[in-house]
Length: 469
Image (tube, rainbow, N blue to C red; front, side, top):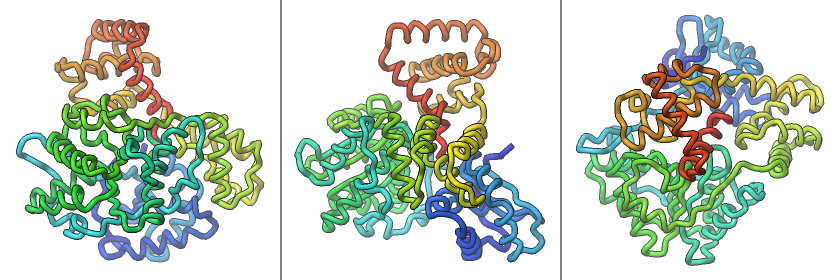
């Protein structure tokens, strides 16, 4: 069982001051891998620590762990033993993301130490660094994303005054970050004097907290309000419940949009559906053009696979592309992971790419994902509603928490074979409470409540695709 742990300070030979050795080891693993394979599987591999005769490495998730164990473990251990001969085995852990502050309400702001964010990060170069692979030319356009693509192109070109701001709405892995970076890359090449700010909502939050603690708020405001022509803000839902950050963002958007500047935001929920978003910010965002991105249809998935194979300089048989597109209907990252896995196995075993090979890879990759349980659903509901497990299990009956609780019980009934009593135990509720929740949710679904329908679809998609990366 992989244990999720927070990233630790490095220890041992590859530890503090030894990042060069770890990087050299990863570079040595590049032999025999394509560029995409290295970026996906090796570049994201993290050193955790050395425990006696065991090297502990961090992977992004179970799929990542499975691939490294099957395809790289022997080489990885052999290379590590050259630097630490006593090593006998490798242990894998799921690397947890950095812990971010849950809320900024009240006076007790929590966050990074002011020294953790350097001054140059606050008042530095307006030009952000964008992923060079994420361009408009590399984006595969289909019915699912055509409007979002056109809206992003218009912002980059600044063609229409009513397209100065766009909100890209999509579930994880469907291409909203690709479009945000594509805007940045286009501006950087065609409007090099434009002051472009790219930041995630979490980075915006941490930077603001650091500036508050370091008495540098004027620099922060100048950076995002005055010294900014284009703001690219990702993962807006992170701001749920963070009232002071929301207020600062609202004033920033007011300033930028009133001055005719351009703004692109991304999120996995519409502004009106993000919980604990203050009314002023919600109102300001209501004037932004919302451009949804849906899951790609079969034809678009085939085109995505073919484009990715071309990037990897691999001649992919059309029947294999169609097989992958048919079998992997989740998010684009999952689709590309299965393609890269197929290419990797072909290279390593020196065999041609066939449907049979693709079947083996898809089966091993997708079957490795854990079966859905009530706990999985509980976590997905918490992520979707921005509430805690303790909230769902508490006596609290606020509208938001009650809806999340009822929806979670309904999904448990839909996706698992758990009894009503066991579902009740998951949510610290009685059998009769679960029965009431199920009846209520069935009535809401039958009445075609649009809000309930959106929430159900959003969380169901997260459960079905597991949001791999």
